[in-house]
Length: 301
Image (cartoon, rainbow, N blue to C red; front, side):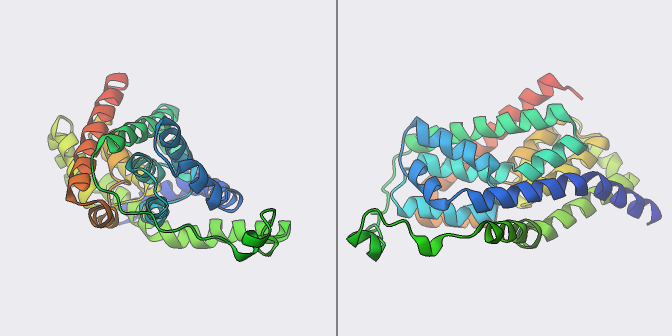
């Protein structure tokens, strides 16, 4: 147990500084990027909304569960399936916090590859979504502010915040709401990583069974069944790789693990039907495998 706590504290020392900075940047993004602007630029089909939803998704401080209401709001406003699926992939797959932690724990090569792999995966999923034939729900009538009906130049002064209020709101989100949202998952991920790195029998099993092709199968199954946020996945993958899992399988787990949750599966099935859900899951598996194999070709360890 002493060795376990030593490794656990080692992970905390590596992760906490990067996590504190990431949470702060996430708070600024949350406060300064208005949801209205996101909906304005992503609420249509084509290459531009897909690219926009993917790039914005990589920097928004939102987890898999948190991205669902935003994606549903796109849907209710008449957005095509492509931008919605791209957003559902890119948003939880990485974040500022996850990238900073990845740089601290896994190094620059992993970090750069994850960032561009998530963009590529999001764009590909967006094109796949636009190609799927399905019957969308009719978008509801647009809600209009009663003041704007009278005066189109109305600026919504009642919604403005002072600079002090914005700073307080950003800090509250960064260090209260965001840790409350993903804190338990992050702690569970670090504890699991310390467990894997501590106990020798686990390491032996990983070295025997997960160093080759079976590592990819494990990454896919574990990633789909056990949802874990992008930041918490990093120390877990690091511990698995230290015990013998190859880098490609580790990258596959980093890409697919944060995206799939039971919430996402249930919402997609409800809003779009089983056909769209099946295509989403199969495409996600194929894309994460290809990108994982691509990383192994660059870093074959």
